[in-house]
Picture 1 (cartoon, one colour):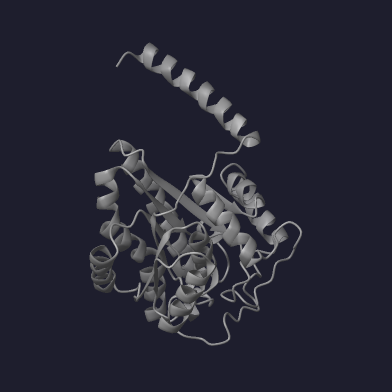
Picture 2 (cartoon, rainbow, N blue to C red; picture 1 turned 90 degrees about the vertical axis):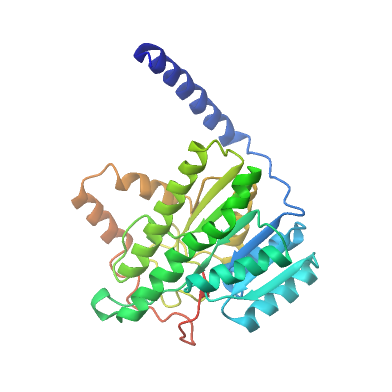
Length: 311
């Protein structure tokens, strides 16, 4: 490659993309039509998973709902049919088990067809200090919050590659961007999910599969019950998110092929600051924002189980 020509090409594209980004700040991308698309949502039995399912039902998508909670999943399916579509298929699936994910995936492909939008939403949280966290629950956190993404992608992305059409959505967390006291295993699992999603998106681009989109969602605490008891020091700056609001923003980001969805928007600036300010200042900022004490009064959902929980 000619260094001069390659550099000139880079500068030209850089200017073009910066102008495009500026333009899109004022003229948002038009939302895509998902009517008839097959949308898989893991952890669909409650919380954000259920709310996203209802929104996609209203948009005319064919829904594939996974959850370990059979009763909750069937209730989501009932509400989805009532909300706009009869094309709803619910499956009981323990997302901590690789072979079960593969088994249910094969069943979905035979009974419904090739999934075109995968939303990896199932997640669990222990909410204990690292040294107080039982080893089996740490392993379960990684299996559900991270490894399940690997297996669903392996199951469904090959069909997306064949058609150069699809979308992989990773429901991560603000704890996948910045470490949080009392959430060592959870942060590790969510950091891993972000890294996996970013790498996967680059693999698709390197293959020339520009029709396969990626959206990474990093919300602050959402009032689904999963993080009940957690405190926010400055609610105006870092509010606990209303679940309906969060679901609407997530679905809107997916429909616009948005690569990152930060909720609230202040998370974008905090994430950017992390990479440019000295570590000691970062610790001072974390202390100011209350990051050392978010989990002090954590209770989680009233009924403690080891089941998958929707974030």
